[in-house]
Image (cartoon, rainbow, N blue to C red; front, side, top):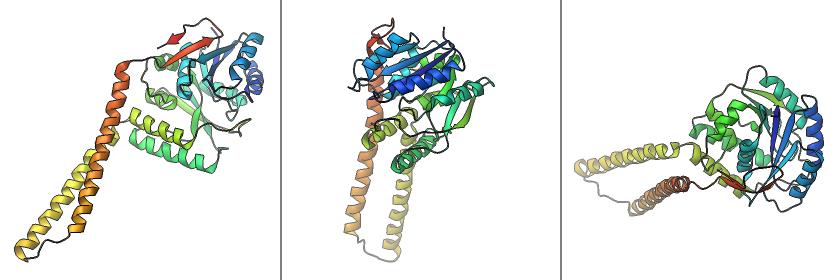
Amino acid sequence: MPHISVIIPVYKAEGCLEELYRRLNASLETLTADFEIILVEDCGGDRSWSMILDLARCDARVKGIQFSRNFGQHYGITAGLDHCNGDWVVVMDCDLQDRPEEIPRLYAAALEGYDVVLARRGRRNDPLLKRCTSWLFYKIFSYLADMDYDGETGNFRIISRKVVESFRTMRERLRFFGGLVAWMGFPTASIDVQHDERFAGQSTYTFRKLWKLASETIIAYSDKPLRLSIRFGFAISALAFAYGSYIIYRALFHGATITGWSSLIVSVYFLGGIVVSLLGMIGVYLGKAFDEVKQRPLYILRRTTFDAAPGHL
């Protein structure tokens, strides 16, 4: 049983895997020789898997997992947590923006009595648009999920074995690693770390992918949009009732004629659009419930560098 496991989802990372392994090995050796590095290759179509095989041949502490197709980053983290054995588990990205040299500091903070220690990025080395959209997402997510989530933290953190075992019991299909860990409520601390630029390549998260992840995450963690829609519906009804009462009052006591054909048509189309949007929102929730009922595996393994089942629920 290794003392520390490091889980890294890998996607189109052939330009940084060797440097990642070198810096990880140097950093972990200062803590213990008893560690494992689990690299989960998410079918990026480059040489990442062959490089993982080479690393695993040279160092038995390196373990590789490859999916049957592209499942996504948070499913890669899930697969790594399902197969890790460490007393403490570090989760980080593969692009070296998360610095391996910060792992000893995370570990030292965890030994002070915390089950989760987050790496808080004081200054992010990301494009301005990405920083702004990320800030907006976490603000909206915290409000809708009724969760005090720190938007300055990413996936980079260290968690205890208790957290890993609890995480394994949660098998919902919509995965957001940070949200699941925050929901558990284990004692949590954070430390400020340096956030580096990407070592190689470019981010594969397009605006479309980020929007899809954000919307699915909010839907997965909260029914507050539905509850807000009820309040909005009552507010619209109250305004309509008040305006209707005003029209009746003018007609009865002042003999005013009822006018406003254009405003009536606009109001009908406005309310019709709201109704269709709310029905669509309900349909999205029903669709996600349908996906959960099917109970398909979260991911399917194509191959590994160690003895593991070809698929895992």
